[in-house]
Image 1 (cartoon, rainbow, N blue to C red):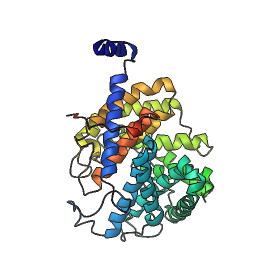
Image 2 (cartoon, rainbow, N blue to C red):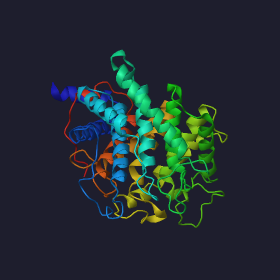
Image 3 (tube, rainbow, N blue to C red):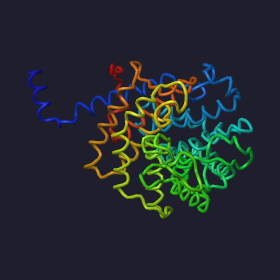
Length: 394
């Protein structure tokens, strides 16, 4: 009877079910790792494990900025995957941490990594404010603290928007407030946070948002790549430059998503079409080997086309969000390709790590990976009540 039932199930199940089942198991393993490694104060990551660059980044405010950003990603992973009892408790602790700590300070004259804390703090808190859990009457007090910090982060980001209209995380040439340097992908992350915050009634400056969207638009090159830096005249540069498509694979996803969603709300002048989203995804998977080669390398920008290891999960998370924007009949094929690239990097304990710098690399990578899997899998009400052993993908 057991054999007959299994055979019948295999005949009835769709062809993609084994891939989907593996992705669900991998997601559960990622979430379990995050749940087991959350700090008592609700955060993820800490500076207790020094990395090879801590002699250079020795300011504790830098580490707090990374901790805030990492915690926001962990909270987003919980919400993306679906909330069981354990996930709900972890999310509450993470949201409380963000509501207390997300307004981080500038670490030094040249180091503006606090912008990452503000940017992902805004994204995480805005997603929480829109989540059904924090719209319930019994969560009214917590929702108020979320909104208060969200408003503060928006005002902080306003004060750090560069003359070119964007945001970045260093300011090495001219140390000033606002800074002078901006990047396409940091700006895209802030745009996405602002777009989520606006329907909540938070103090989003529509003019600044429009300028930021135009800044991302200005980074887009005719071949579909996005320049790393915000430049007056963007160019792909030399044939092995980071601004070629093969060096822009992850940026393409975040920037295309920002322009697509901004265009849907009337903010974009350059309209991103569905075909542009598809072209960007096709490039991501066609040239994925350049992200593979950079994965885990210890020095930034040492791989072909100046790719860095920490591009890996950033790109997969935003690729998953782009896949969500496609018509339903186009999602599955791209999702399956994404699952394979995420799962092949998962360690036996359920965690992932694309760049070994300090103790933040593993939790942020695992959170990005969990969100990428969850968003590309779609909702599953049974997901958060089962606990599966981490699969051996190696």
